[in-house]
Length: 443
Image (cartoon, rainbow, N blue to C red; front, side, top):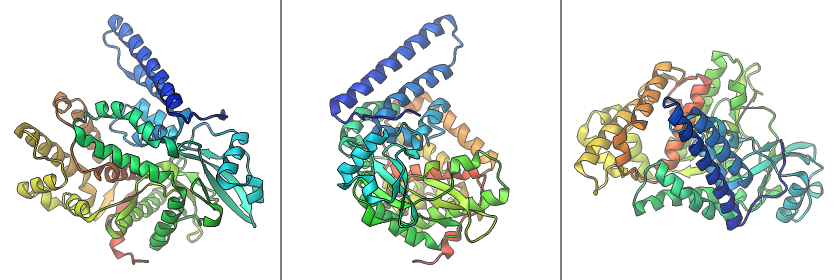
């Protein structure tokens, strides 16, 4: 893989890169429509593939917030065409890293010393590169360490990157009106938090300690004395990314064991801690042999940069809507839709009827796991119903005429958490006991 000796950090330089990408996409559309004149039955598969590659090529050298948004979208498997999901998923842990000379220069700027002055050994080449930082292997005092170094300029470019992405997002999600600012502010605040590595270490230690009561999941130890706002030092974990693990044959028993650990991890955070690891993509979880149960695997959570606190006034109505009884009470259901800002005072009767039906259908399907004692996330019927519902509304011309600007800002990261979690559970084909988190003690 090529390495980078420079990352665009200025607003004009980053904007120019995105404009060049836009020109390429325009050319792709021109080629597509010229071919469609000759072949009217031509589908958009090649267009989507070309666009996905060109967008990713533009973003991967920018890194930072723009690439992070692409990574977030890669989790929306039922929202984007397959080509985009496949291409954007590379942003999870496989992007061009910084070159060794640039890493050394950046480390010195952040730490006030070169890597070899801080650690006994330090790998000059990265072992993992993602959207906001890259990881190097090091040793110190007999311990093997993972050192995450943030890309230069990432923290300073969050606002300007989102300003460039905003027009595309408004069009993609059909958002209208001034209220859209609350969603972008939510994303901006979270991305800024993700660039604060001191905060990430604090969150990592807090949630790791609290979740130590969960079986079959473990966490690395973090070293604040060798970390700062742009560098994190933690234990090196030898294992496979979850996506690598599920790409090979694994037993049903192991899938269930890992899935139960993952499910309990999330339910415990949401319902007990009221804050949650809101970035559940495969690059943030490793699988390694269990140190306790010989012959079994265990899950390791390795990234706590994106933590979403769940306020009480959102938590209560959100999970009341997940209650099967609530879905059968039209008046109660409408009351909660209003509490969650899904139905707004400015909605027309047509919009109220449309979105009430849409959300009732969606929630009746997506909350099925919570209505069972045991749920099988490998059930093809469940996923077939989700795909069918997504396709139907994606092709519904009515929804394009409606204002998509609805729902509390907290939906962004809570829904992202559940969509990502469900997809990981599907990858593991896990059958889990739903409410075991209720039996876990507080630490």
